[in-house]
Length: 283
Ligand SMILES: [Zn+2]
Image (cartoon, helix red, strand yellow):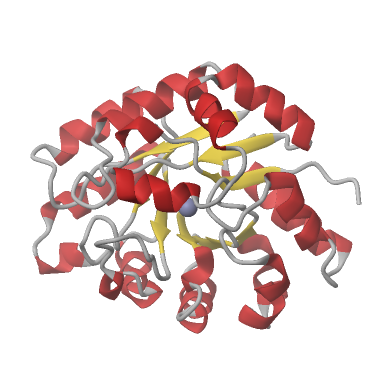
């Protein structure tokens, strides 16, 4: 099938900032580490790579996690600067740390002024429940309100993480249900659909709230029908993402081709790999 592809979950990240043990795990046994390192600091190399892979656009995800991953809030400048050099082919997300920021409103204003299109919240790497605003975390409330006002998308990591220090108790998508109740206009993406433990919770929350979506990133494509037997029921709310270059993801094109080879109707596949992201990001 010849469908244009928006890979809505890719990690172009400042690898020099990552703690050594975490970087080693992220890189795994990939044979292409030197090339990837170059891509992380050279937008032209990424654009050439996207051409080779026949990927129209990507959404690149960065987040602040000094305590677990090593990422400082400098990731926002990095992400914005990188995207600016890619002429619209890279839609960039940044982040404000929900418990460490000392000026959530100011940090959000800066993130918005940088031109970033979304905020990534990583409850397992920024240890905090996504509904902690109900227990007095005013930073989270500010982050969500500002996203809602400025039309930014909120992506929340759901599902386990095995990086050293990750706190998985926070990563169950059921904690995101409150956000749909309290911030109904906020566009929310549950990244990874709660895999591999909480797919049913993710499906429930996404179906319940009109502005919730989920992405299929970091799920081996062949497991998608087993993990989400009713996926077609939320056909307008599923986004394709590879999570490249995470371990186990050989390539953006290799992964999307595996998804396109699954036994779903063509119309559904087209929505997932292209139309839904196009609409959400107003491309
Ligand atoms: Zn990811």
